[in-house]
Amino acid sequence: MTIEFRDLHKSFGAQHVLRGLTMTIERGEVFFIIGTSGVGKSVTIKHLVGLLQPDSGEILVDGKPVHGLAEREYYPLRKRLGMVFQHSTLFDSLTVLDNVALPLRKHQRMRMSAAREAAKERLAVVQMERYADRWPAELSSGMRKRVAIARTLTLEPQYVLFDEPTTGLDPVSARRVDEMIKRLQTLDVTSVVVSHDLTSIFTIADRIAFIYQGQAHIIGTPEQLRAADDPIVQQFISGRSDGPMETPGF
Amino acid sequence: MSRTRDIRSADSPPAPPASAPDPQRVALLLRPPLLVGAAALGGARVARGIASLFAGTLLRAINRQSERGAVAEQMFNIGNRSLFFVAVTLGFIALVSVFQVCLQLNRVTGDLSKVGLELIKLMVHESAPSLTAMMLATRVGAGIAAEIGSMVVTEQVDALRMSGVDPVSYLILPRFLACLLMTPVLAVFAFGVALGSGTAMAYVAFGVNPSIFVDFSAVTAADVGIGVVKCFCFGAAIPVVSGYCGLTTFGGSEGVGAATTRAVINASLAVLALDLLLTVAGFMLFPPSAA
Image 1 (spheres, rainbow over the protein chains, first blue to last red):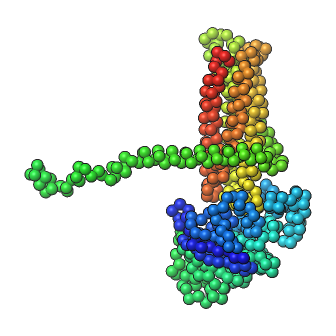
Image 2: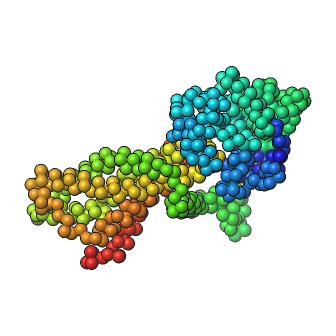
């Protein structure tokens, strides 16, 4: 079971974001996609679940192409590939419980009462069952993130896509999210994580793809990345403002 | 000829050949038609998008894909919460209209017995549906575009899709059905308020007896039919047009603001265009002599 990107290109107007991205993600690994802001990391994972369509290139999940499908054809895929969005993205008009129950009701056609029962169990896993009747606006960003993770895991996906899961969280909450991601690995879940968080990257990643100028500049283990003699990679890891790296908008 | 050319070349730079047009001048000349063309293409793209969303919404309505309870909630939002706004607007418009008409008629003929008759006829087939719809286009249209637009820019619509929820069924259809049902109800309510305020104005300011003013004898079945059809058409157009503006929001809060403005303008224009179309169609189907 793998995810493959083959020569992926994507433009938004005159902005050519992905310029021939090619990489493979293996089953069961925690795979990080890193790079500067605006380089196309979130764009890359949104292609996997049909939220964006490539201009050209191929995306394969378990050997099957998943680009250019009709919206309804993505539904089975989205049961297997869950996504935790950057800003948690809970539905404002639904309570915490109903947020988590929604995918069960829609994807698995569960009745409301059964979906709510199952959602309570999922919330207990992330220690959020006490807040089941709260509205998203009443939660802190860390709590919202946990609810978003519970909502994504409710369908027991084989792949989970995390879009900057630790952004905006305090260090303790961030490490707890890291632990949660690592625990998923024991359940044979493949995690694809978009992140800037160097602590997360070098703590829980099995492999890392560094995206630069729309391509996978380097792919390797955290050790390989640290040892790379590439000045662009080293500038990113060290966080220096001076160096050869070109950053859009700066 | 040869001598002239020599003199010119000696005193000034050589003139471009007569056959080669000045590129700057050509660009300047082409600019208006290019702008018009781009605007026409943009308009056609929007019209196609709205038509496609309308067809999709209608299909889902036929397949009864709406969330349980969502339509009732939207009926409350669109209907009940618009009551005050519609009542105040239509009430004041009727007050002013009756005052002005009576004032002018008093100067010319002095006969105010037909004012109520004509006002009621006009209200039934024209003013009540169209003015109610214009009020809804501003209040409801802006609300729909802002709510859906915010969901788009905060990725909630993407999250809906990930949760197996069809955004059109979830966001557009309940508003479409609610607006479709509540526009005629609000128009009838608006008619009642306008009639009441008009009658009061005619009685208080001009002494017209309410039993004379409230005269439905000129209202025909055709007037009622045209009014009802207009209500349903406006009720269908407002949520689809403003929902389209919301779904096509791009950017952050600035994008939501732009989408909201676009929704109010486009929904109002849709109401005006449909009003003209339906009035002409009504006139052709039920000519005044037959009506």
